[in-house]
Length: 182
Image (cartoon, rainbow, N blue to C red; front, side, top):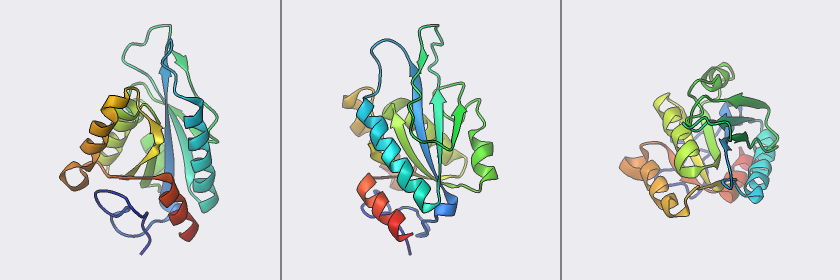
């Protein structure tokens, strides 16, 4: 049995078999405008997690999402997180109008770790869509940044409700420990 410690509301992954050959870190980076830029420290955290995932045998996919307002003022915030593959999505959900699902299925990657910005929009939408497609999802909470910090608790609660309707929530330290043991 190999799970990530302290995940809520259930031990992740649900089947008790963390398998790096099935694992992908999905790092969500939004196109944005103006002052709405994720902290640089976020990308350092995601990059460190990406290195651990890759060292264990997982893959790292960076998804650039596009807000509904596709005005000319939006720019790509694709930070260097050490991704193996970069995918562009046509909407807030990283699966929408992108090759993400095909890429993950071709690689037999069905255990997803979600990270990046913005927690309550792009990361959350991507996680919900992944769950609907049958992926086993873990939100790495301390590798995410909310757009509005007052909404972070509600975003987490939505994932955990009903026994983990969209997956589980965990933290980097426990993930890193589990990857060392996997």
